[in-house]
Length: 301
Image (cartoon, rainbow, N blue to C red; front, side):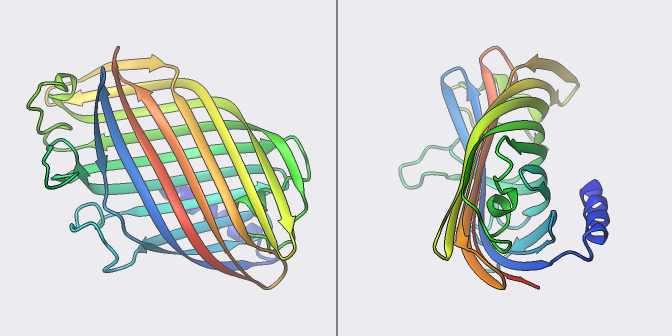
């Protein structure tokens, strides 16, 4: 996270004389982890909760940070809500965007224990996940506004649609001091029995499509993309590191933004969904599915 803070400080100074937009937002994030062994799947997910966020945007830069809103957990457990951290930095130049993102989770509810009385019965208090990414997005139409997609419509919005070119780099680490799978009565996950850490990184290219559509005082912006590339994974058990696996992973993302446009005060809702799947064995995968749903209020000076 340190390098994100250094970059954000530099670009804040660089944009000091530009128009400034301050945004407050309420966010519902989620980060599900999935282990697959052949046809068998286990899912781990944090409980639903809300998070506050603040965001500063200049003409070509934004930084976003947030934390948990107390007593907004509706999942009957505090596991998965106590230790969420995220930081986003974005650089947008007309039809070009660079996004830097870091998130950390600790505590999940798992479907390892199958009981009729509950869907996710086993609480994994010490299971942790950490993910960092760098994403580059380029629209072939120079009128496509990356700011309208990723921030708000405070600079005004013009209609545009375009094919997109993406490049990405992702790092993912899931860890537990015990093992990644604790309960396995049917021995369907023997591949994971001794593992307590999986570390993976991937980089690649892809393509997508985006549009920005203003209508009256409102506008709608969207981008959807899919990519493939190369991956390196390391599996760590109690005794050693093993199985550095290099393959082609998959990556997809979807962004939407619906809000008001124009100078001064703007409101809106937006969503960001993305997933990365890593191959760690002949018939084994680990993946994550992420979403963040926002409602926001921004004001431009």
